[in-house]
Image (cartoon, rainbow over all chains, first blue to last red):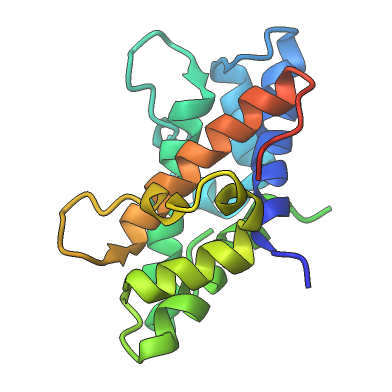
Length: 93
Length: 93
């Protein structure tokens, strides 16, 4: 049976690429693209937190989120997901 | 249409949990569990690199890989995957 992990890499790439490419600049997500991504991909996260897009961390402060910054956020959310799920709680997003 | 991102969190959790739980200690992957995970989930990565399991980075040097360390490795591999895929190359794993 093929590993479920491999399609995961493709999904992460595809989600980033779909939203980052909206303005033709595929390498980064600008503020508008971050908001669209959060609304479509993590709608529940925004419900309790209208500034939820600030979760996508712009570490270098250039006003844009590149794939490395996107993956750091995904990793943090994955840790929250595991913490909730392993303790029988429903993850927030 | 539901977001493809949400099942990704579940897959990452499930893959880690399946392998980490083998010795009953679910919080971490020991050396043997790392090797089994790599063989099953990222077999191609080991082909060219028999010490491939060292890719799963034991940052705190305690001899075990926790979920945070697992996610750092996943993030690095996702960046390699994107780099290869965005340039029309076939990812190594």
